[in-house]
Length: 250
Image (cartoon, rainbow, N blue to C red):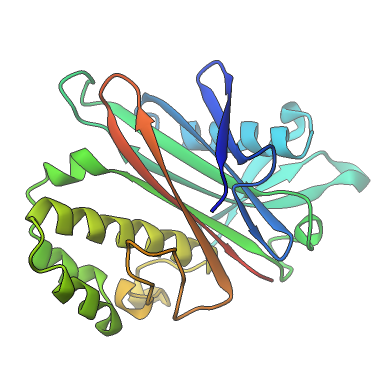
């Protein structure tokens, strides 16, 4: 797992491992960032994604734009003969605590950096892809979700062994383990460019099998996908942000 460092630029934190990427899979580099602010929908997430991609690729953010193909975001950098398409992913998580208002959220974004074919990627060309997801742990623990019910939604049959092994843990601990698994799976599904809507060709969470949540993240069902986890302590008592980033090799 990479050692994450942070560089502050106003309210933008760009996180990367030791001056490099947060995830590396066969030279495919994934960079990710987060920003906390008022609830702003997709436009706010796209703004963070544009800032991140421009920083990573040393591009002019004024010449960058976000487009979506089948719901998957891509960042278009520069223009003309120098045009390039950067694989990207965005997500958001709502924050609820005594010190934050109900309209606060955290947005996360990820993009691929130069290397291993990512510069040649495009919406209509095969290549590596990225996915990112995040949830605020404390907000989830206050949601009233029951571990057994959530396990039915999240876990593949092969993963139920570790859930049974954790039967003696407190409910909050079991929920935290399930939430880490859920965040990992969301990142995997985004890197596969599929959603959860099975009726439209998506994959159900039970079709993705992972290593146990206390182990190094490994996608057992889709070995072409690499995973990495991180945790961010949000300011002002906002809680713990669980983040997982995934890269699918092209």
